[in-house]
Image 1 (cartoon, rainbow, N blue to C red):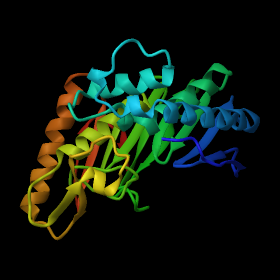
Image 2: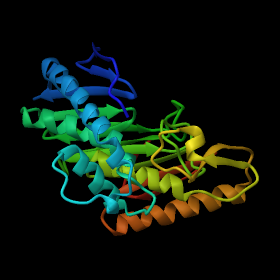
Image 3: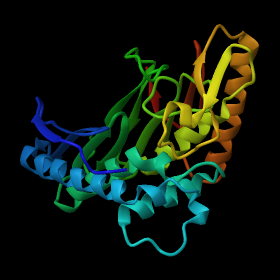
Length: 283
């Protein structure tokens, strides 16, 4: 991967800042005592471009299975990605499965070290939240990754300071092996949520003549999972196939909850859905 992206920073309403660079689009909000800190958000946006550059420089390494990466990585962002992939534990999951969430985490932590008491960073829907104030943050949950219809909201409160929410599935920015319209995960950080959402969405695969797949490299020549089939589209599948996919996703999510990797998950497949674990969902 080469570094040839143009970067832009936009100041939006309600104290939010957008940072755009290549495939990355960050929405950044930070406040102290309820007062938005736009200048600090702009500084964080500039830092985010450096984070993306670091990923680009280490891309050949980070697209390998984490267990094959030798030695202790000096780069904190790379370590975060590797640790997230290792925590989830799937053999075909590389650190790149955690890249969007990891960058959101790095930006959120940068702002926290600068004294922010309320931080929300969304990297294309993979969200890092840092809370040192009592007011909760509400995150909308959509049953399909590329749609705006809200199923419900997750309330993240000060029961812990660090939160991560991420979604994977058909219609998203990344490739998926499963049939889930969306798999949304809540964890203690966005990198782990990102990797776990990828794994849960992957686990929903059900062999069916209406599930159309192709090798990952046909969709993306630079993919980190060459030779692995990914889902192109899902046709009119039966209710039995939907429920089978949801059951497989539930088992995967329950295993990650039991290991303490994630807190909960929401999984949707073509009008069917299920909630696993503790999500703090409200209508």
